Amino acid sequence: MTTTETIARQFLTGLDSMDIDAALSNFADNGVQELPFSPNGFPDRLDGIDALRRQYGGLPDAYTSMTFDVTAAYPMADPEWVALEYRGSIELAAGGRYDNDYIGLFHVVDGKIRLFREYFNPIILQQAFDTDSATNTFSLDN
Image (cartoon, rainbow, N blue to C red; front, side):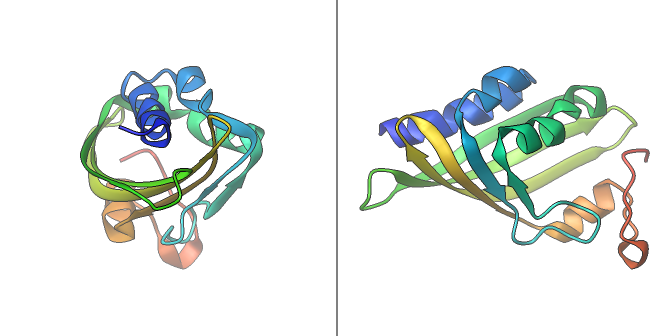
């Protein structure tokens, strides 16, 4: 396993344990998360550790449990890059579940995630969080 893959997996492991500080400790201060298929009402880009902390900080209140099982890893020719396939299984505190399949592309520089680009099915996300695309709003209350 490459160092890049290890760091990407450490991020997901931190989320598994809902230890947001541990998860985000794998990001560079100027790290970015891009979510190209994010539906209306959800962020499509998080710039910097403060934005990441705001986004991820509420997860322990919104979810009772979450796991991200990596099903495949694809190291790249450039050792600073890796793609992971994983399955997220999340139990919502408000009731219900959010389970989705993901592909995460990670760029790790000097031991820290500089870019995390996450691909997922936005329809499943909208259904789990009872979103209303027409008004660009979403609710964690199911």
